[in-house]
Image (tube, rainbow over the protein chains, first blue to last red):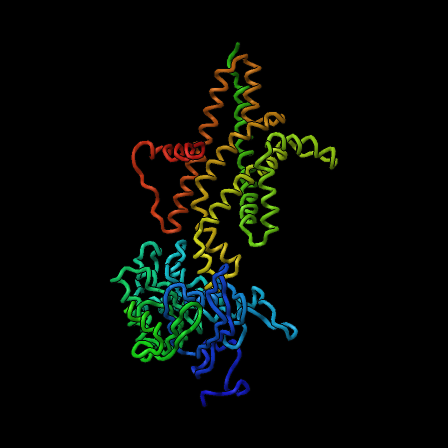
Length: 278
Length: 244
């Protein structure tokens, strides 16, 4: 099957049952003229971009340039002021009713966003639940998995992130790096198509960063999950990225392969930024 | 001048039982009111916040005693039926202390980190699931100490019902005083009874708090010297903070 199959192609399933459609390079995320303002400050300015299924995209740029806002918009933690966002061919923030595009209802948003998982800078584990329940709670109560199924999935994921023996710990009993690895497992337990990583190592002590990045490298290599990553770890970005987007003042000023952006960027601003952080 | 006879003691202990019942029923009803109104005051719809805010302000700013009179004496004229004094009292106390409690619930719920809500959204929980599984369990340990104070206030506030002729311990105290002609002994006894009740409640709430804290992975408060063993120190600190 060629990579550019049409939507009418009978081999391309568009039903929701396929949690992870084959990585065929089709478009999974599309931002269409998305604008986001905070007061008079325009954080994103008519932003257009798309991400192909299965790709690992890293967003870099100075703070305040809108990188994290993109992740938060995708996670529906905030709403765009203008423009539309599509995930897997469905509008995330809008729905079509009678041929018109109207702001989406809570139910629609929840349905589309089940395809998206997020790992936060501050981990945000639930302190009132032990590690295992942090991971199983959403699969059981949102996806409707049985307790046993969810437990099994959670234990596999905990093994994968190297914490198979900490099921019964409370999050406060773990180090930051361990908490973040649990948070990664928690996001993966929902089997999302898209994983959003929001500066996931910024809050960690330096010696704990490597363990978390190793886990993410492993996921990038062994799964076909689409990753959007905001990070200041440029070596990590270079390792895993299929594509790097350089942001400045709410616009993408340059994009390209990791080799291109880190090796020989076209834009003066990109060069300045990289020389400052590398 | 005469002794407190066994018959009078019986009155006192019946009164004690009435006080306990009043406290338990009012606390149960007030707890429900506090939870509902407190959550309504953090609701995302402004109209819900507004209505619950109005309720809170009215009941915080009015007297439980006057409201009790209103329920007991005025309702019958308006509706043609009368609550038994006991239930009129429970209604008035529950609505009033529920309003105070709603402030505790609102404060504790607002104090849960917004990031926890966001984590709930990221896992596609419904707002109701998020509240039940994430927000309330984390807010609960912070609610227990101030609710304990309110509960003690409520216990002592139940003495108001003696004015409606409900036979609680304060009412029994008046009867005994009239019968014996002495105020000192009986009111000392009743004072001690209130203290013992309050102390038992406080100990119970301390156990609740410790369990609640353990339930969110926080170590229980340290056990130390005599004062902390008696559970007095922390109460004093809260009382001092509240008045200061």
